[in-house]
Amino acid sequence: MQASLAQITQIKVFADDLETTDKLNLQPYTVVKPYRKGEITFHESDFLPAKLYAIASGVIKVSKITTTGKETILRNLGTGEIFAAPAL
Image (cartoon, rainbow, N blue to C red; front, top):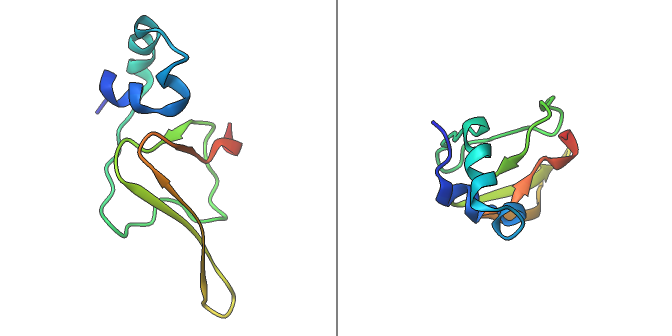
């Protein structure tokens, strides 16, 4: 499913910097993938294709598990934020 114009507009890097026509031109290249609460989206060692990932709604917890099993929360990302940008 493609992102709606409202979803594209709420992405912080696009909110003020793109005209509506540019957002509409971008729309066919978008994909919305829903996740359930608690579902893991990526692991640290995963290969990520060169794409821009953004949160359409909700929160993603970025964490790291130590060898002893302790979880360290690195950051919480919310609606409109991008992540995995180094893949670009």
